[in-house]
Length: 354
Ligand code: PEP
Ligand code: MN
Image 1 (cartoon, rainbow, N blue to C red):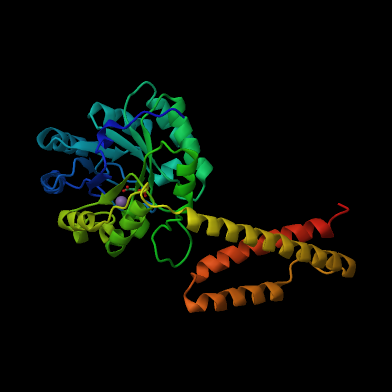
Image 2: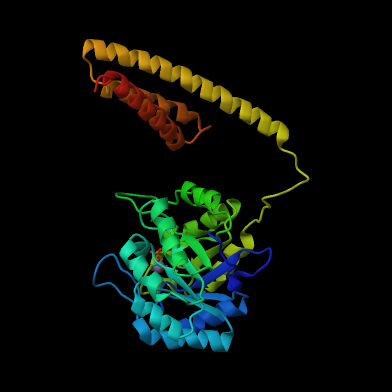
C-alpha cells in the first residue's frame, strides 16, 4: 500500500496527540475543553458526534447539530477536528462541515459491509482516515478495512489501537494484546499507529501506564479522551481525564529512542540468538518424544488428549511462575502453544490411516 503522509500529523520528533471528549455534549462543553487543550498546545481535537453504543437507551450522541460546534473549534481555535463516522450519511455531513480527520470505530471496522459503504462514500475525497481495530483480535479484518479505503482512493490512512473486547471479569476494558499492533507495524511499516489508552483502560488510573507502554512500543501518537468534568460525562465517564491531567500524563511520559547507533547490542543479541536456537532444538526433541507417545496411544487405543496430564502440565507452569521471574500468564501461553502443537502431532500419528 503506497500511503501518503497525514498532514495534520506533522509534528516532527513528537508523538501525535489527539484529545477531546468521548462525545460532544453541548456547545459550551466542546468549547471549554477545546480552548483548554488549545492553550496547552494540543492541535488535534476529537469529539464523538454519533456514538455507537453497545446497549440502546444510552446517550447516542448529539448528531449533526454538534457539527457547527466542531466548526467553531476549528475556526476560533485553529485546531484540526476529528470525529467518528459509521455510515455514508455521517461521511457526507462531516465532509460538508469541513471536519479534518475521520475515524472509523471498532464496531464498524468489524463489519465489512459498513466499511465498504464508508469507503464508497469517500471515493475521490482527500481526507485522512484512522481505522480503529475491530472489537475482536482479527488483524486480517483490520487490514481488510484499510484495503477497502485504499481501494477507494483514500491514501492518508492510519490506525488506532483501542484494545480488544473479551467476556467476563477483566482488568482492562479492552485487552491491549500488543502483539496485534506490533504485527501490523511489521507488515505495514509506513502506517501510522496511534494508541487509544482510554478505551483500552476503561478507567483513567491506567492511562499513564498504557501511554508509556505505547510510546515504548514506538507508536506514533495517542488519542486520549479529555473532558472538563469527566465524572459528569454523558459517555465513558470513568475513562476521561481533565485537560490538566492530560498535560500531566504527557509531561511524565519518557520518550526513548528506537534507534541509537551509539549502543551496540550485538553481543547480547548473539547470546539471545543462540539461546533461541537451543530452545528450538529442545522443542524438536520434545516433539519427537511426543510423537513416540502418540504411537503408543495409537497401539493401545488411547485418546490423544488426556486431561489429567494437561492439568499437571498447567499446574507446573503456575508453580514456575511463582518466583516472579516470568509472568504466569506468559508461561501459560507458552505451554498452551507447546501443548497444542504436541496434540496436533499426535493426532496426525493416531490418524495416520485416515
Ligand atoms: C470512541 O472513540 O469514543 C469510541 C466509541 O471508540 P471505539 O470505537 O474504540 O469504541
Ligand atoms: Mn469513548
